[in-house]
Image (cartoon, rainbow, N blue to C red; front, top):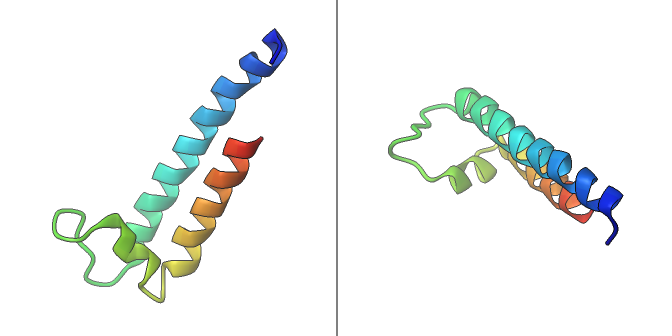
Length: 67
């Protein structure tokens, strides 16, 4: 890994975490009767209205990590 690869990794990991948290908040708002205090975040992956958003967020995390 040369210097330019390392300088690209930081912004990619920042983008990775930012997109995950933003989509997590959007999914939590969309889910009916979902509470951040009482439910686990994995519940968002099983609720019909938010499953596609939550699961695609994990795909994006994986792709950004590979990049």
